[in-house]
Image 1 (tube, helix red, strand yellow):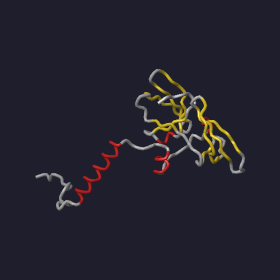
Image 2 (cartoon, helix red, strand yellow):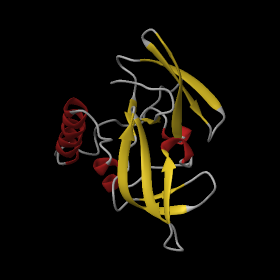
Image 3 (tube, helix red, strand yellow):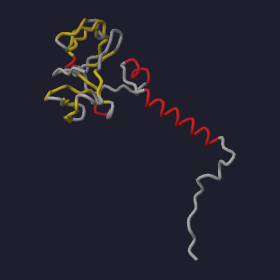
Image 4 (cartoon, one colour):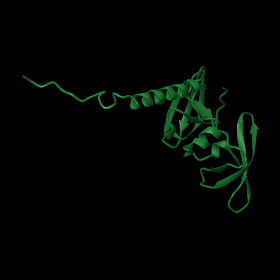
Length: 155
């Protein structure tokens, strides 16, 4: 991943941070400012839990000035994105990705999938194995006898 100062990224590790801005690059480290919570965090570039946030035509976005836009076009210039869209007065507005509201939450599965925020195949396989094991335990004829709550009685 190539990081450029001014780009907007989302942290998978802590979704409550909101939308981060790349503010520093130093060797193999990248520093992001998260204005939604007033924090700065530094990540190793090779294994950072970050994804670049790219909206596409048809998405609704909000600016720091609380203007909601319907994206009609996205252009990239020197690694930074510019969004062109229409506001509620049908005026065409072009903004830089720096002007995006920091309080972006990708909460629904559809939003996460369409923005490329999904788990690895290994994590999915682990969840499936866990669910299958839980299912086999619940169908066991010894169900109810497993994991009893007991304590030693003093004599």
